[in-house]
Length: 209
Ligand code: PRP
Ligand code: URA
Image 1: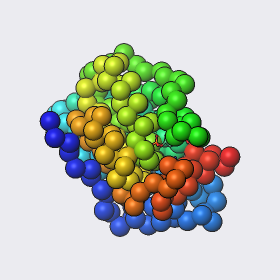
Image 2: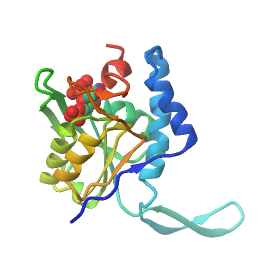
Image 3: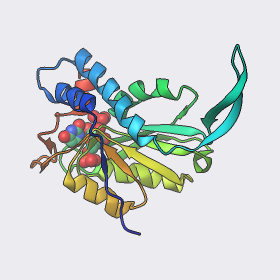
């Protein structure tokens, strides 16, 4: 199966929030606000195809047709920085389940080290959204998708903010069935495997560490 093209969110407001989080002089409290709002815009695009089922709704005046999501939604932030996307998105699907995967890149090798997972039993029945602002080498996302598939997930969408050709190619190679939605495809990686121009260390900037 050929890999799908990544979806790049073109909304003008997304580009404004992205510019704010890229700026090196944006303090943590502003970085949080803009990342949360940007995540919401990206998720709006990523959730466009979620199937609905019809329900009846009694308004104060009449009975009418309504809709609800046909399947459960599970959000899976990759710790830590994925929590910055979750904070923005969760209010849109307040009854979603939140699972967690902990992965930390080795500072020397940039290889992913998985240190935590808490995954629910109903992954196969759900629409699963994997959340991480940065898709750099693609190692962390590929490992997270591997864990999710091993635990039964069938429909996984990767949501990131800043990606680059190396990370997109790696994730697409490892998991061609996983759609990727991003706000930007940057030029590439530097010698330390940071995305350039990027926004720096997303976790450190979100948490102020
Ligand atoms: C960052 C980022 C991704 C990963 C991306 O996390 O949030 O998880 O690096 O890099 P990759 O595509 O090359 O794997 P980091 O490992 O710094 O952990 P943190 O969020 O706890 O700071
Ligand atoms: N992780 C980050 O937080 N930023 C990068 O540019 C690459 C990996």
